[in-house]
Length: 218
Ligand code: E4P
Image (cartoon, rainbow, N blue to C red):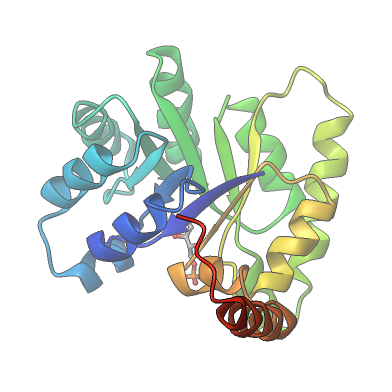
């Protein structure tokens, strides 16, 4: 399972990259607005920190403008993944960018039908939003199970399921049980994966007992 972080915060990205466990970064227009930075600059900086996929989303909704934006975003760095919405125009852009060798993340997926369309358009990643479905009383993880099951029936589909809108570690654990390819989540949620009170308690006891020996390893 690949771990992507859903942020444009450079300090958070550097901290997570230092763990050696970070495979990529996703952004969206809301995240860019929150960063207060120039979109193209911040994407270029993230691409210089993380070797893996960095999703940069188009802003337009019409095909003609979207394809121009997609082509421009793709020139920022080799590891830019162009992110497009799951609309007819977005999928048209997806197909065209894929034919030029650019990776594409199809975002705002909320149904199995939409996930089938993304795979048919040759998306590198499809991003089903689990948290936003939970928020309206649906079961976001059910959608992931459904998509995984459908994609398994078609070995020629090579679209990776990128579980998005993750709210807590349990979403990640459930996604892993289903064999989802990627999760993207806020930095805090990735850090939470390390946490267990027994790890803290055990480490404290080991450290105290080691101090009693008066020894050093180095
Ligand atoms: C994914 O690519 C999206 O940017 C993100 O996961 C959306 O998450 P949110 O529902 O917490 O805004």
